[in-house]
Length: 336
Ligand SMILES: Nc1ncnc2c1ncn2[C@@H]1O[C@H](COP(=O)(O)OP(=O)(O)O)[C@@H](O)[C@H]1O
Ligand SMILES: [Mg+2]
Image 1 (tube, rainbow, N blue to C red):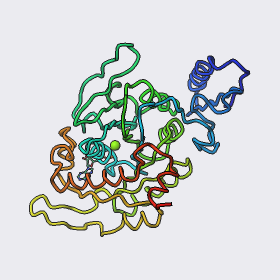
Image 2 (cartoon, rainbow, N blue to C red):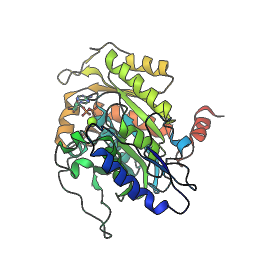
Image 3 (cartoon, rainbow, N blue to C red):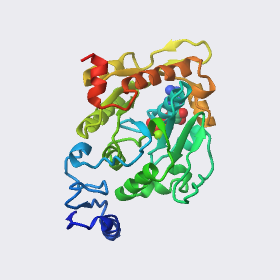
Image 4 (cartoon, rainbow, N blue to C red):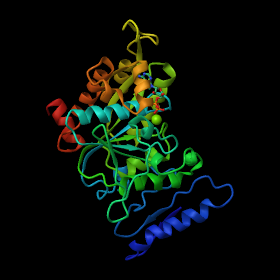
């Protein structure tokens, strides 16, 4: 649905959108509702919601809200076409590695349907509110500030949420958390190419996306879909990380390429995006994640920690230190 309001009606945009969304969502057979409200001053949707079928380009729609995350230099999305490829593992260890190298880092769990940051970062508490009573104070662990919907809702209760609720929840995690000054905010995205991806790319000026994949062909095909989605919404692709790239035997230390070798690198080349590195399949990575002590914090100098450090280094290098434009980064990278 699309509404055009007259001049001076800005203050009613949000309540109007909310009540229309609520009323339509309550109808039988309605799966998802998108209400785009425009006023003459702001021709784009101030709610960040958009009709299905419109070209979802944040820049074109003006949906990115420059007032969101004012102290954050770079927001990067860690994404994958499908679940279980180690997206959260990469997001968490990337955040910890970046923090250990002296950056001010935040970690936002945008995987509304399956938040795993609380477990992986070892926090099982309710967040506190700031003095205003309106905003949540992020937790700080392993040098990383973090927030997850997992801290706020009962386990598994978000699984049945519809699109507009997902968007609203994400919007609040961006707006109503005291993120403060950060060099990088790492966002752990849910798998796939749905509402959450759209919301993030519309609401926030993303510095780029890191695509996580595993070497199997199926996962790579999913990575291709993820890449295509970010291209469509004009989000720069920082590159591809191949997780569970090879098996590192915990006993003898020997490496075996159980899925063949070089698939991720080839895929990155075919897709025309940088290859950010490979992470081995190793029990220490899973164990440390389950214990809330990411391997990048528990064994930063070990081979697994180093694998994440290399990825973090590549990711940081692909960002412009001052939060410059894509064009600046291109010039920096290619010397033009
Ligand atoms: N490189 C790895 N080595 C061993 N286990 C891993 C590795 N990467 C991920 N895992 C494990 O695989 C499972 C899925 O990873 P997760 O990061 O939750 O995936 P996603 O976020 O993509 O769904 C978790 O139990 C995690 O500990
Ligand atoms: Mg996950």
